[in-house]
Length: 207
Image (cartoon, rainbow, N blue to C red; front, side, top):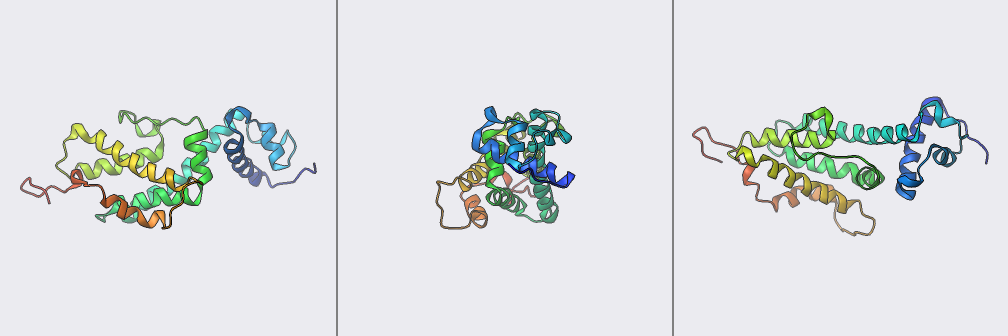
């Protein structure tokens, strides 16, 4: 096989993308730097200029996708933070990111060894960042409502499971849907009676 020549920075990103493709196709058990190098058409030694081990490449792959996803979610909140339907905008961004990159969803949530702590006891930096972003927004909305604080976790897990489940369906190749997933998020969310997000009125009631 003729070995390809890549710019140093380009090769790192290509190894990451090819690594994600390989894990999706072959699984973690067959994953190795040598096999990713072969998929890229470079020498078996080439990946070692960027990664010391397959574990380091795998961690980088997870961080690479997570960073892109986190940036999209944070930008969405920043752009819509003063709007009453900010949660709907965030849901649309969540689904759309993975509809446009279904291989990322499969890698992160099916094939990788990434862990998410739903206990709500972890510090933001110690947990899966996109979940922390979603959780933080929901907490800020719940704090403006009359919903009991000891039930926050139930509400957060329910809402996150809903949006994550829709995303899972939207990225499955064997699932057919005749409308735009992202555009329908608002309609789907209306199926929930989100009473727990009703804003408290000044006299203690809700509106």
